[in-house]
Amino acid sequence: MPKNLMRALAYCGVIALSLSPFSTSAAEPAKAALKVAFVYVSPVGQAGWSYQHDLGRREMLRALDGQAKATVVEAVAEGADAERVMRDLAAQGHQLIFATSFGYLEPALKVAADFPAVKFEHAGGYKTAANLGTYDSRYYEARYLAGMVAGHGSKSGVAGYVAGFPVPEVVQGINAFALGMLAVNPQAQVKVVWLNSWFDPARERDAALALVNQGADVLTNHSGSPAVPLVAEEKGVKLLAYQSDMSAFAPHAQLAAVTHQWGAFYTRTAREVLAGQWRPQAVWGGMREGQVRLSALSKTLPAEVTKSVLAKEKEIVAGRFVPFSGQLVDNHGQIKQTGGTMADAQIAQMNWFVQGVVGSVPAMR
Image (tube, rainbow, N blue to C red):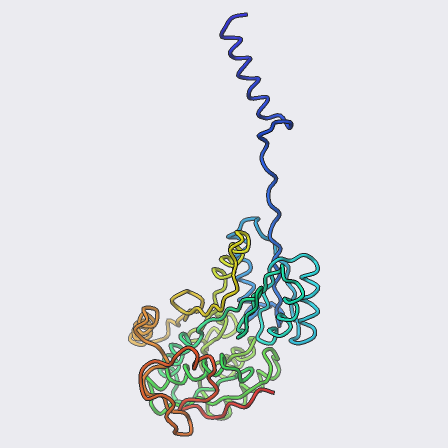
């Protein structure tokens, strides 16, 4: 047999051996996709708190490209229902569970203690555990900018704020919004109506209407549905949207939107679990980290207003300006801070209103 033919046959034999199912160098089986679960306090809908978390979930799945699969449970009430749902998800083999509402903290801690191999992340929480971390955003940074826009957009100098529960995160947003508005109009007022609910479209609508009747010509909110934007559009007042860009619901009313951006955090967390590098942390990101933005600035705003707001945004991102800095006085006239910058620990426990806010912070029930 010619030598060249012998070489060719031998080469083909090597290739055949390498492709054989009995080859000792066969590829290792692919790892199973990470099972991730998301628990939402409201329906996902087309905008709002849960919708923004779900956008983050979708971004995570795209980024991980088959390395993760996700389960979503919508409209889960805080308390016993949340505990039952998370317990079921853990028992079904989910390795990472995102509990996306403030009232899910205690249920998540209970379930985490019973499923130590499962990783839990709680949105807005103030307690961690060996297998539970927390994550939140400095929404107040973008709220300050929204207040600046409101100060320029309001003719009456009165803004209405529809607020969910009197927890520090909500109080921070109200105060930062008021400070931004006061920086533009020192006589401005922010009137607050509490809902004691995160998602109740009918009550959100009633609260917004009441604020308009009290003279507010700008509305904003910390609640979960598009009800407040719809009232702004209906009544011809201005809107500073929250959580999502609400221009689809208030195309004429919306001046800007404070939007939540969760995709990068969810992707990073899932990758840490996949790599065996996840550790429980208390994450508190802001505009610098891209977790919150002032979006959809209206083209109807004067150019000088847009320029001043964007300049302040750059200062916040660069760390040259902090909304809770300088002298701060509460709405009873008591000095809360003489100067400097408020520490995170104080911001995290904020339970009082700045001067210019009409209303009070009730105790949580």
